[in-house]
Length: 200
Length: 177
Image (cartoon, rainbow over the protein chains, first blue to last red):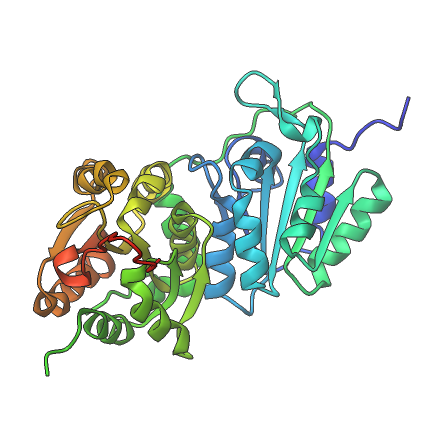
């Protein structure tokens, strides 16, 4: 029997240990619960819907804020639905963006059905072939440390696929009001005046 | 000389400080995409599918940037869930410029069902739709849509009719793509 798989929350904690002013977008389902479980912050944007769009939401944010590091945390099912966005991100080549997949090989919110990553599909290889300059698999603690270093200091876009166990951890639901999450994020990032600026 | 629809659109986008432009190409958008690509203040993003542009726009807005999403009208079919589940659930602003197919003078029957569904789908999703049937209307429509998106915070879509961009005719030996 191989070494027990990494736990998604401990792995995420390790990956975000270097966070100071990083802006984080999380994909719907467990990745949003995971990010919230590490401590709520206004510069976390938790998606509760829009499956497939987490990585490109991070791309838009990274292009708008080129001086800030942007990290997308999502799951394998969500990333599979937005696989074309890996080509879009690779072409746009934002140096400040990292996309991390917590890959449990399951659709965790819908009854633990197996995803394609439990079969033949390897998302880091897909990202590499799509053109990501850095695309890493993380299975061991040593892999995780290397990925954490790439996220913190590497020239992006960085892609990391972390193989995690099925256990989702204790229930931890972030606020679910999308307007609130959007506005508090913008106020935290842009200030009151910046967030209220309108076109005229 | 009368300003082309795409020159008016580009001028309005520029004046409104649109800095991120996601697009899936269409023949009707060729000039507007080229103008945006040539502009140092605009970051154009080639998308593999239009729905990516909806997430892109939401992310740009989180970061304080205004964006535009350019597509052929068939792309409206691809953006539905992301538009409903992110843009409208969070009340993100969004500006879409779509060049029509499957409508006025269409000669490809495969385009017609989606073309006819574009406006009802957008309206069902709560978008505000302006249709440009004459190039002279483009300036006013783009400006109105910019205000609707970036002052009122709505989803605004400007549909550029085939009376403006032209209707592709598939005649024998016509190799236009």
